[in-house]
Every structure is written in C-alpha cells, then in structure tokens.
Length: 574
Image (cartoon, rainbow, N blue to C red; front, side, top):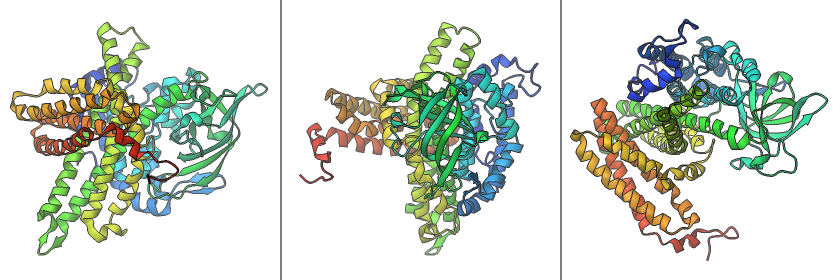
C-alpha cells in the first residue's frame, strides 16, 4: 500500500507553519542538546528533517503493516488467557513494528529514551495510525500516559517508569471509569488506603470500560480520602502490572475498535505509587491526561474521516451505473467533495489546536529551567487559554464529522458497503465511539462553551481576520458577516441570564464558532498554498448555510419553550 505520510502532503504543509519555528526552538532548548545526544538536531531545519524522516517510517508501517492487518484484527480481536490479555496476532505485529522503529514514547525527553518530539509530529503520527486502524490507535496512543508521569511524577518515578516505554515497548492505560462513574468521574469509588506496615498504597475495587486495561503501566484514579464523595477526595496512582494484583474479569464485546481490548478490572490489595499530591488526582492530573486524550481522539477522528473519504473516492471511481462511473453523478461528487473539504478543515483545526497545546507546554518546560520574560509569560498564558477551549472544540467537531463522513462513505458504497467486503463497514463501526469516549460530544460542548462566554473564540477570530490578505477580501467580508451573526446571537442567549438556556444552545453556539474558525484557517492556508483555495470556497459556503440554520433556530426559540423539552416521569406527554 501507499506510504501514509508521503501520500498526504498536508503533513509537510502543517510542519512548515510559521509558529513551528518557535515550538521547535523552545522544545530543543535553543539546540543545545547536540553535544550531549548525537541524534539531537543542530538547527530548525535539522529538527524538521528528523520529524519528516520519522513520520515517513510511521507512514510506511501504517500503509504496509497496520492497514493490512486491520481486517484480521477486527475478526480475531483480543482474548483473556491465564488472567492476561492476549492481543490479536496482527495487533502484536503492529506494536512490534513501531517498537522496533523506536516509536514508543517518541515525545519523551531524550534522557528517558524518547525522541523529544513536540506534540505536532506525534499527533500527525497518531492521525496516520488511526487512518490505518482506529482500534490500534488506542493502544499506541496511550503512551500519552508517559507524558503525564513526566509532567507530574517524582524524579524517582520518572527514572523508574519512563525508560521502559522506548527500551521495553511498555504499554499503558488510563484507568478511570467505573460501573457507576463514567462521565461523572468525581463519583469514583475505587478505594486507596495507605498500608503503614508495607509502606505503600493499596487499591481495592472495580474499574470498567478500561481501554488496554491489562497494560504494563497504568494510571489509576482512586478515592484516597475517607468519608468524601467528590473530586477533592481523589488521587492518582501508578500501577505496575508486574505485581499481578489485578484480575482481568471481563473483555467487552463491542460494535467497533475490536482490536483494542476494553477491560473490566478487579483490584485486590494492588500495590501502587501515589503521583504528585493527594486529592489532586481529578482536579489537576486527570484533567491534564484527559486533555491529551481528547486531542488524541481529535487526531483519531481525522484519521478515520480521511480513511472513509479515500474509500468512498476509490469505490466511486471504479463503480459504474447507467453507463458511467458514479463520480459523474452530481449527487455523488457533491458528497465526495464535501468529505474532502471537511477533512481539510478538520485537519487545519487539529494542527492549530496542537500548536496551541505545544506552545503552552514548552513554555511550562522552559519555566522549570529559567525565568520567563514578561512577553513569554503573556504568551504562555494566552496559548494555555486557547488550548483549553480549542481542545474540546476539535474533539467535538472532528468526532461528529468523522461519523458523518463514514456514514456518507458507506452510502456511496451502496449495499456493498453494508457487507464486510470493503473496509468501510469496519471504518463506519469504528467511527461511532469517537463522539462518546474521553468525554461525549455533549460534555465537550459544555467545556468549549467557555470559549464563547469568555470571548476567547471571538478574540481569536478577530486575530485571523487581521491576517487575511487583500486578495481574499471577498472571503473576509463573508466571514465578517458570519462573525457578526454569531456575536449577535450569543448576546441574545446571554441576555436571558438562564444557565439552562445557555446549555441548551451551547452546542449550536460552539459549532457556529468552529465553522468560522475553520473557514479562516482554510483561507489562511490558501495564502501559503493555493491548493486550499477550492476547499476554502466550498467550506465557507457550507459554514454560511449551517450557521444560518443555527442562527435562525436560536433567534426564533422562545426561552419559555425550554419547559416543553423537559422530561418528567419518563414521558414527554403534557
């Protein structure tokens, strides 16, 4: 098959974004590590060349190993044998290929065996892996847990656990949810007690729906404070599978992402290590971990969307009906073109978000080594603010869009797509989970609405507006009108001073902002490469239509009508 990096020129385009120079310089400590590590870059060009070479290796593994194994993995799936999760044969081959290429823990600092990559090339790798097999992307992507240990763990914990990722190919898991604590993590009941005699913490209880639950190294959320029922009683712990104190009681039988084991775990006096401080488990450490996971689901969603688009195009170019290939029918080429345009828009939002997260994180790292200048402190604060609202925006937007694109791709395949003869049947099933796990779309809207109510989205939209060239003044005029409508309707909602009313319309408001942001990003992309001009034109038309629908709905919605939607006694009847 094709190399997934080489057949997607957009990756190189986004690596050439002007902000990347700042990210790389800060991440590489002004390129001072070359004397200590022979593979550290000497300058920006050297660093980007390394990223591209590694991403080319990832692209080759994705195209020629992971993608070719995807069907057999979907059929075989994992199983439990002697209290150990055994991956499908293809899953083991996939992981082994990436491990041998040195791609486990790739964003960790070099002192722990990592490549010290910024998030940008890592997220690009994650997108490619998801395009090849969305289920396997979960297993490989959980190396995010290593970043959390690096960020919040003690020096002893870093030295103990982090080298195992690259050196040993250690797998990871985030062990958060329980039978009665899904989205509401503050209800976690798994108990953590300190054993004075053994001088260690021990966990007891059950966790459910744990992706890759039988991993080598797990981050576990547990209740460490007795007589508490909220987030303030929760702490985070590291569990090492070597202790063999957890029973893998059950593997879930799922609709999609079948190669990724989803486990029910029983902790029985399992010895663990406390991460950071007690009581900060959910309010600080898990929130950071979840933000990384949500960015990962954004990348996974874009990868799935791209895979679905490519399958639709390939099939449509080969399928003939009524004497001509179906790409010649307007009803078909509209669907396929819209898929491509949405993938371009989503990818632009994904890497804009990643750059914001990268910059906020690298400044945090630099701050540990030297005082930041006033300008750097202001930049760090601004990028952190943007990252906090753009992360739920990309998770919500990309996951919903990838479901629509997978749906339309299957539709183009017709009845054949409903059979297991083509990859789209698996892709369609895999897509469904993206808008559910790591925070549902409804929860992402609640998180992203802060970008609306605080004015962060509007402020960033205004910034994009200043960057539009004179040649694109026509685009700017349309987007200024969309922005004015968005601002007007937001104020109309806020004037009610009704929180339920704001929550009711939060997704519509966030989607309006997201459409304007993606439109501007495509316009700005076209100023660097005219190939994006077509996507910018089409997406702006889509955005104008969709935003007008949302505007009209809110404009004509009587706040008192909210009562009609409330369900009492399981019935909508009046």
